[in-house]
Structures are given as structure tokens and as C-alpha cells.
Length: 475
Image 1 (cartoon, rainbow, N blue to C red):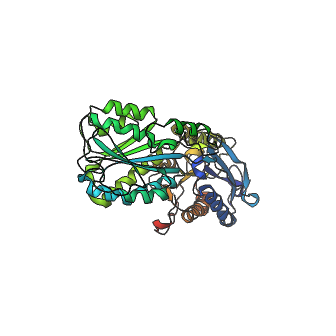
Image 2 (image 1 turned 135 degrees about the horizontal axis):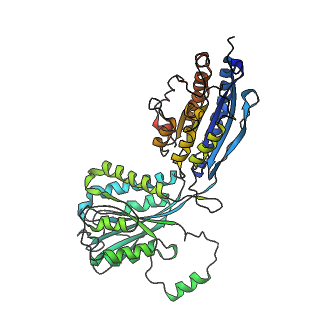
């Protein structure tokens, strides 16, 4: 064996470090369990690769990051003695959402009404997938008067000009039944013109729809107030639920009632998202912007399928905005990836690293985006010779992962972040990072180059391509 300054090649360490996201979102849909399982499955193959490359002493450890970062397995441990200790993600309290659809039932809404009926449950399912508890309500509004038959499932209110129907908040399952009773022209068919002055008196009823105890009532009677005061308090408290109003209308009025409408919504902590008509300084966009919501141009959607796609986009936007809370009540905004990179950078200094080591392998795994100063953490890592020369791999768990950030971590446009949208794909990618990448970093070709901190290029085989089966995707 050729001797080199600094000792035998057999003594050269190769540090393999997992950097794992354990923020609250990793506790949803079995992500953290799948990650633990994938790493456990990869360990035997890692040991086999290490045995085939005796000139490298593979040392493994793991770091986790959520609210801050810490070493999960702090000591660089030889693979022969390495055992995986399961990661635990921050426990989440499921967000609670009350979502009320306020739907124009006038004649121009023919295609959209059918799309609303076919899409609203899928909308709720998309929100539920994000880990939320959802209740759904419905308000129909129009000019001309009620034209329906039996009204067992909703309450009709005749206002100064408008007629409205209120379906109270309920489960997605019951809402699926309620939505079927919505129809074109149900409350007149003569038009819906937000935010004309005569639409202001609709919104006290909209606000009350979010109130469990008075969904279908006007002002509570003395008897009702007495019953409310003394009824048992063993029911679920929904007073802290996030309140979201989704307005759907393809007609627009003036702004005479805008300030009063927005004031009512803001006072009740209701965020309004509007699928409506664009217009310079228009009421639809203003209602959304002034309540913290978003606006989507309904005129660009043609037909049921196109509108259903738009409603899916709205659901995704709402899902991402929902504040997640940890089980202890604190807000889970913690994905301190930058802090984790700074901690790794400290361990890649010389010392404790030796200048005769092999290029470290760093595998970053995340399902979200950093909430701290990622750029500073990456800068600290790249300031270390072994950080800059490390083989850096990134795995995105689910479609909400910030791929651009993971690409910045890799620092090589020829190597892309790996997208794992289901447990099987995650296992394949973890095994590839644990074997093919490890083999490349510890191969004789790498050993015979000048593998010092001053520079080394490690050729890596292409990663596996999981079978294309979107039906299997759960993240």
C-alpha cells in the first residue's frame, strides 16, 4: 500500500452526517416514521459498502433541527457500532378551521354552481390532508326571493333587497349532503353585486354563521339567552377556530358598502378569499386584500373542470396559511435549518477534522422551508474547507418542501434535490444516499486523488427514479 503523509490510507475517516427536519409538519401523514424506517433499512447496505472499501473509516452521526438544532447522535460512530435512535417530530395540535362558502346563485353562475357542488368536498379533503380539523358552512345570496321547496337543511332570510340562505357549519361529510341543495336561481336569479350598499346587511348573517350557538337565528330571544347561559359546558369550544370566508361570484357592484363589509369581517376575525371579477379598485379584490385574503380571477375559469382546478389552488393557499400549534400551545414556526448548518460547520473545522480525511457526506432531509437565517448557516458551512468540498445531497419530503433552498445547499446544478412524495420513494433515495454516494466518496479513485481539504471532485452515479405512480403519493 502506498504511504502518504499523515498516515496509512486505511486510517482516513469519512464522516457521514444526516441532517434531519423534525419540525411539527414532520409529524403529519407518517413522515417521521417513514424517515426512521428508511434509515434503518439503509444501514445494512451502508455496512456492506463500508466493508467493500476498507481504506475508508466511515463515521456516522445525525443532527436534527426544528426549534433550534441539536445533535441527535452527537458522536462520530463507526458503522460497525452504529445503531439508529428514532427521531421524534414536534407534536402538533391539528389546526381548526371554520370555512364558509358564500356563493352567488344568479343566472350567470350556471357552470360555476355545478363546479362548486362537485369540488367543495375535494376542497375540504385538501385542507384535512394538511392536518386540520374542518367544519364547512354555506351562504347562498341573490336578488329575487326564495324559489326552493323544502328548506329543512337551510334557513332563509329576506333582507332589504337580497334573499340569503344559511347552511350551518358542519362536518365535511354532512356538508357534502348540504351542498347538493344549492342550485341556480335558488334565491331569485336576478344578480349579486358586491359591495353595493344593499349588500351590507348580508354580512351580519355571514358573521353569525361562524357562531355555533346562533347559526340560523337573528337576535337571540330572552329564553334562548337563558338556555345558553345555563346549558352544560361539556361541548367543544370552537371560539379559537380560524375563520375563513370563500366568496364566489362572477358579478361585481360598486364600493359604496365596502368599508362596512370589511369592518364587519375584520371585527369577527374573518379572512375572506374571493373568486371574483377583476376591476381597477374593484370591490372583490378589495375585500380580499383588506381582510388578509387572496383574490382569484373567476373569469379565467371556463367550465366545471377548470373551476374545480381553481378551487383546488384556493384550498392549497389556505392550507399553507394555517398556523400550526405545538401540543403545548406554542406556534410551530420552527424549521431552523440555518442553525443546523452552523452546527455542522463547527464540526468540519480543522480540528476536529483532519486535513487527511475523505470528503464528508452530508444528507439534508426536509419537508418545509427554513424559518431562520438559512443563508448565514450555509455561508458558515461553505467557509469551512470540508464544508465546501463535502458531498451534499438533499431529499425533499412532500411537495411543500422548499426545493430552491435544498438546491442552494447542494451547490451543484448537476445534482438536483430528490423528491420523495411517498414512503417507498423515500426508502429508495435514503438507500441511494447511504450506498452509492458513500461508495463514491470512499472509492479507491477518490483515495488516490489529493483528497485534502484543498479540493476533490467525487463522481456520483445517478439516483434511482421511483416508479411514476401519483396514486401512491401521500405527501
